[in-house]
Picture 1: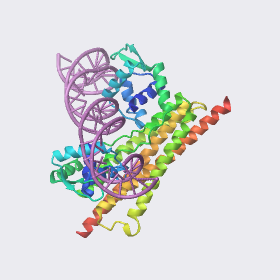
Picture 2 (picture 1 turned 180 degrees about the vertical axis):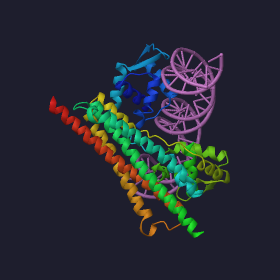
Picture 3 (picture 1 turned 90 degrees about the horizontal axis):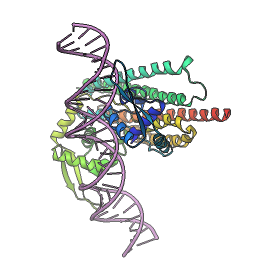
Length: 189
Length: 189
DNA sequence: CTTGTATATGCAACTAATTGCATATGAGGA
DNA sequence: TCCTCATATGCAATTAGTTGCATATACAAG
């Protein structure tokens, strides 16, 4: 299961609670893997039971106590084993693309606002990524030589940025196409 | 469930058997949605039971008979309803990206061959897409005006092409980064 | 006449993920 | 006092998806 490995990587970078992990899955880890808090708590429980993780109860002031998880030795071994074994190049699943092809059997122009909504969501995400890159990887915060972890985090973030830029450009192509089809249709009826 | 909708779209474009659908999910529909034949047969059975699809036994020569599915009126209604309701902009799940960040806790250079393997898979897929585009959307095969279905299929294919090109460029960035980190490391130890 | 390949369909068991609740602490504001 | 928000954790039910296996037709190659 890939969620296990994503959790191992995140906890190797920094120990944290289920709640904190859930927030990371909305931010940096979320560039390439998503999970809800329910799923995270369940998997954390199983991983702890399997001895992959250590837990520590951490009392807090002004907020409920938390359980801080960190990677135990067997967890590090499991991560290493996974890193050395190949994974299949994955195909994407993109529901909006299914809709676009399906629009041929309905009113394609009705899809315009939906595509615009998606474009805005991706544009917002791009802005967030670029802000994060500016903050964490430029100027005095730029990774020093040999800071492998930071360099690898940066190249993954660049992947997220490239993905969002590509998606925005494609959605513009989709919008042009939908507008053109609408013009052709109204021009001939 | 999105697989249901992908099946509806595919069968609206052209009726077919479970086997044929499975092959389409390795090809054109596979640009944006994947499914195994087991899953497809199960969902086809359920959809038929729900009255969304019609079946027809088709005897064949030289090969086993097949069941040809086509979209029934309630299926067209279900597709239309789905098209008119918003879907959430999705986040990607990219296992290789998890590995790249995880490589910080192992030997990053060991990942080079894995990344190269992925690069080749994406490069092969790009070639297939471009060949298909050449075959189906240029010259005498170019969609005539008002051929909405073909135009929308093409814009989705362009999305697949853009995705593969972006991914290849990013994997080159990853490879550069891994080579640079290896050089830094050997240069200082 | 056996083996392999392509076509064709499916069940069973399991794992992963989503959806809908449910609960509790403590701060700040109406 | 009550309401909301952010923090914090979780169960139960359901749906979706994967993996392993099983079966059958028919042609072609050896």
